[in-house]
Length: 88
Image 1 (cartoon, rainbow, N blue to C red):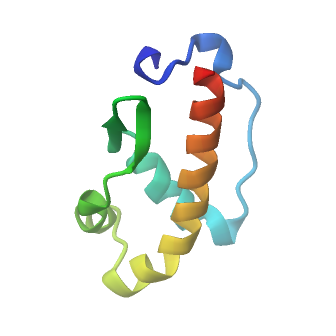
Image 2: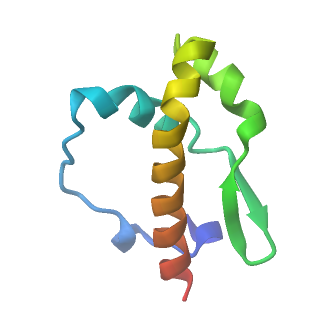
C-alpha cells in the first residue's frame, strides 16, 4: 500500500455490493490486483499482457474477456483516480 501512497486508514471497512452482471469483471479486476504498471510518479495502469493468463485461470474465455474489457477499464480508471488523489 505504501508504494501507492496509501495507508490502512484509506481502506474502507464497509461491505460493497456488486451486482451479478458486474461480478465477472470484478473478479478479474480483483485478481489483477498485483499487476499494476508503475511509472516514476506512481501507478499508470494495469499490465494488459497478463489479462489472458489471469482470465484463463478464472475460467473466463477469450470471447467473454473481450466483453468484460470495457468494464475492467472503468474499474482501472476509477482505481487510478483514487490512487492519484491519495498521492496528492
